[in-house]
Length: 318
Image (tube, rainbow, N blue to C red; front, top):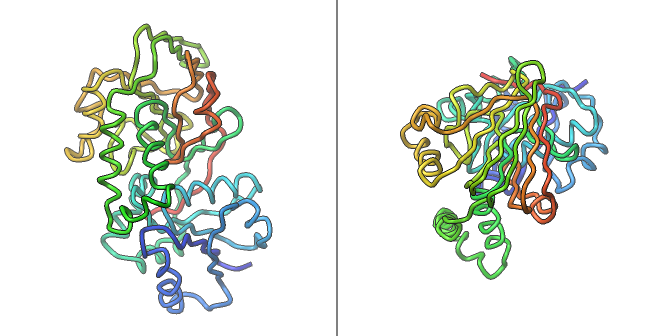
């Protein structure tokens, strides 16, 4: 059995994804014989790709952003792979790596420090959520305003005629423009939310007025560094549901990344729930995203959404 399978996304982190393979070879030669590891570029269909790779590895390492890491974990889940998972953060948001202390380890000690951490193999459990018995969620699932902003940003980025904006690193400006465009977007009145509490006792909340967003999160970091909840734990078999009702709460959420305090600390009036299962009944379909990716089938049609804790995996941490 080989020690490592390293899966690298060549398009993550601007040019970093293209350079990472050479850097890994250079570092690993000081730690492992070449026959003990493989470095493979990721493909769009990760499940199909992994099904064609021998699973004879002790650890699987994902080098990329949150989307890449999520896709790899989903594919491993679908194939029944249970190896420890290492992370080399290359993306823009890096919320999972940030929450687990991996991003800080990368900043302080570089890639070689991460390789040493991965080889040491200390792990922490990470709960995995499931949406509508179909979609796997690693970090967070959200509906409403923020998902609408992401939808507009992705649509703009996907248009070939707009590539010039991203060539000159204007992505953040484009995202800010999308935020202004969707500033007033809300989920209409009539949403109902029910959740399990205290030994499966079910509580229901009905919203008689519109709300900006519903955020279902499993980690402490959201949207590239916003800090959602002081109660967040990756391994407690429950998740946090945050109801963003007003512009003030939405602004406080995004301010949290700068003041370095969680939303429930700087804005105590925000509604947050901890549960292992939640059901949402929507008056109409709204924008939905999981781990930074828009789920078009949910956004376009689904008015009933269920989220539950499905299982867990072992993530390698500092």
